[in-house]
Image (cartoon, rainbow, N blue to C red):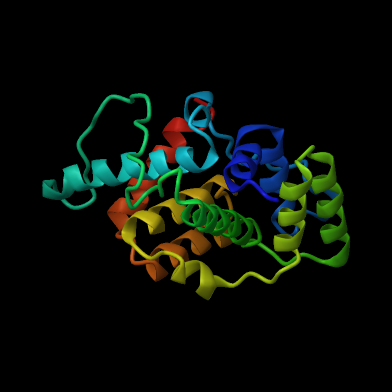
Length: 221
């Protein structure tokens, strides 16, 4: 059986992250899984676990965005970087540990968001898909997690389902964070994808900018 939180941690916290991000993005062909670095989470974030780390990034960005609402448009107060604060369990950001169904649903949503984002800059042909499956087999994932990732990779991206999974602004912020962590955001297609995702989930531009700032500040920290 797949462990969503562990799978997210494996994808975000090791060399698997770079391989996952680079490999799923279409159009890489000859240098598949080797040319793009992806965004790996820093050690301080990953101590929390994959799902909790994504939630903590979204939580920090959301709080800072709300603090800056009284400022001029597009301007947020400057604050010193600090360790991420764990998200309160049972909040809109993170189901309680006893809510296994909620934990599984959120984890699967975030994994699907990562896959969709990583595919945003091109289409995968048969050769690329085969290389990705071979790479997944080499990541050392647990059997259940590997089976889940292979199964999800075999499904077409369903943007309507991903957007519908954003049942509240907090989850929308987490989906956006997960999407950013899956790609380098260095192509027009990837930037357009994130803009589209934010618009469809009704994420204000100022909040989207703060979510991006949190990822840049904490990745590899």
